[in-house]
Image (cartoon, rainbow, N blue to C red; front, side, top):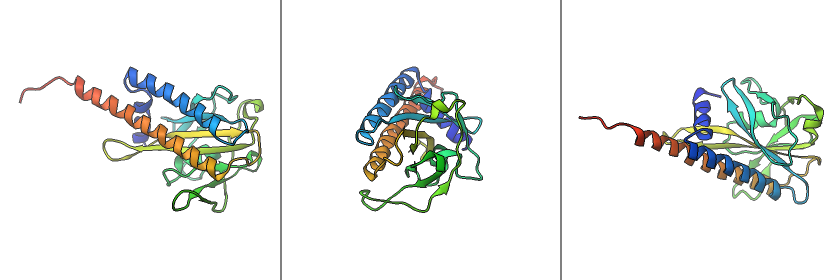
Length: 214
């Protein structure tokens, strides 16, 4: 993760007071809607993780039904995919591929690749991603995890890696191709909101500048 990514994330989350409040409320609604939409009748918990300056991911927003370790920090080493599907989703080169961990105990994850048209997905060979344990095992009482990167292009034309939407269930391997597609759509919607919040902050900076005499 670069300093540009950290700065971009900080702008999108903080922004102007109005933009920050709207973004926080919108993120909560996106997580809630996604949890309701994914996996049919299976109960789904969700969260949004953001990068921090110490080169790690931390939870920013969680769904009301989630029992996660709110103090959990996931490091982002550059020499391996993980640890965990969230770190891999954040670091992978493809901007939108979901990363799927169907069974937590096995710590094997797939970077799910959409075929042309997006109706079907390819599953390349799995990758060992390790796992970062919570401080209390009751705070990770789930089996399957699906993570999707949240990225957008800034006004400077550069890609911004803003975080990861993550979803979990107590069932083993319940996520289907439709869930991959919906999770990716929710991530893109959230990315657009963050792009708008960033632009609001940038435009406010321009509006607040004092005129200079030529």
